[in-house]
Length: 131
Image: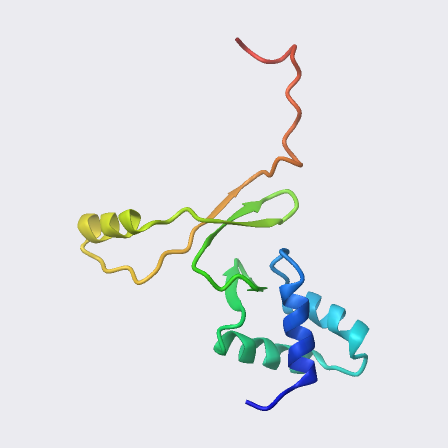
């Protein structure tokens, strides 16, 4: 594949964050470096990077997000701030249980656990804690 400054810049931007950005976020960051780039060009290059295995794409509800972490992994998602954290929840034993219990061959499993991150948990008062 031919070298592309635009693709290289987009890859650097995705690789510089753990925030699991959207295409629009990548577009806004890319515009800072390449002012005349279009949103369509960003989408096309994100797809090429994913096809090459350099980034991964996953769906977060109705939003498509991009990730530099191409290893199979799961996510914790904070319902307060939408922050996504990479974690490893699934193992081979889990996939075997799916096969055994449901007679279903799972090629891969991706889990997103939704809850509240530690930044948004209410601090427990020593007066409110039950012993």
